[in-house]
Image (cartoon, rainbow, N blue to C red):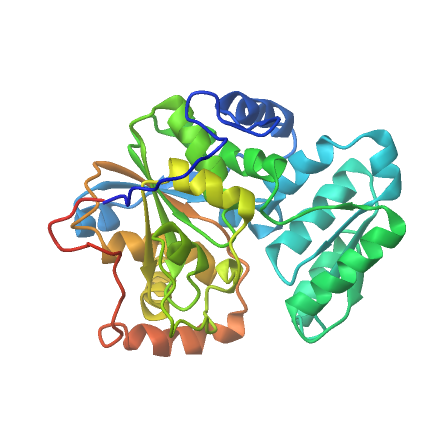
Amino acid sequence: MRKQHNNNLLLTKECGSIGDYQLTGERVYQAVEKLKPIVHRTPLITSETTNKIVGKHVYFKMENQQKTGAFKFRGATFKLMQLSKNQLKKGVITASAGNHAQGVAYAASKIGVQATIFMPEQTPTAKVEATKTYGAEVVLTGASFQEAYEASMKTQLQTGAVYVHPFDDYDIMAGQGTIAMEMLKQEDRIDTFIVPIGGGGLISGIAVAAKHVNKNIRIIGVQSQNSRAMYNLYHNETPKDYVPTRTIAEGIDVKEPGKLTSQVIREYVDEVVTVTDEEIAASVLYMLERNKTLMEGAGAAALAALFAYTDQIKSRYCGVIVSGGNIDISSIPHIQRLADNRQQAPRMEPPNFNSTVSL
């Protein structure tokens, strides 16, 4: 059940405006048209086995088959398309150790602009090399993402390059929202979207786009129980003993929610839930074994929530976002061990939540 919020938001469901910027369904439609010749229209697949298990028609949006292996390419490309010639001349810059780095790098190569990507020194070599392959200049610096981010911002101030934020940017949100428009073209009966949340750019775009098409569509966000900053904010609670810990869903491991995305999520998202790493791991293995599909941890979070809360999710036609598939193959044994322990791992549930509440 959605928690009620008392917010003096500039964003409203009628106009969808935040300040002077219009984040509307029309804006997402613009992104759809601009991105058509560039992004993959990824498959929307169903599974009779999954349908029988959960008692619903389930549709998986396979963004793990998107260019660069994740949805991030959509938002990054649309963002770069909005830049002026003068801005493009100065190049773009960002910090990332994951899918955003590759999304920006590839988008920049398609548009013809120089990209500089700051990555922590301990970033896996495969991710560094993939980013370089797309033509970006990679700067390895710092022991953590935060240190790489601070270094990138310092360079941005010196060079005047445009900083491409991974989620807290309206153009990024609009680009990601094209996923919802595609899904509803592929299957117009979808009544619920289940979406992983890191910083919130993906779910913000999807929520605004989906509710523009049908205001009765429900949006459920999912975070890892180990890293649940947006969950805490949405439910107006941060336990005193809460300390974020590592999660196998590193793609949604964001320590601080976006300021802009938080507003959109509070207004448009119907519920935010958490799942355990053990449940995420079990979902990775399920898709690998049953559907021969490889998902990264973040990409499996939505399916994990469907399995965990299936009795509460009152949906007949459920859309599940498989946000990415860039997984380190060497992590599979660890994922197997986690999955084996899923029954023993206690899951936290939303406030005022019980088995009779409908999501």
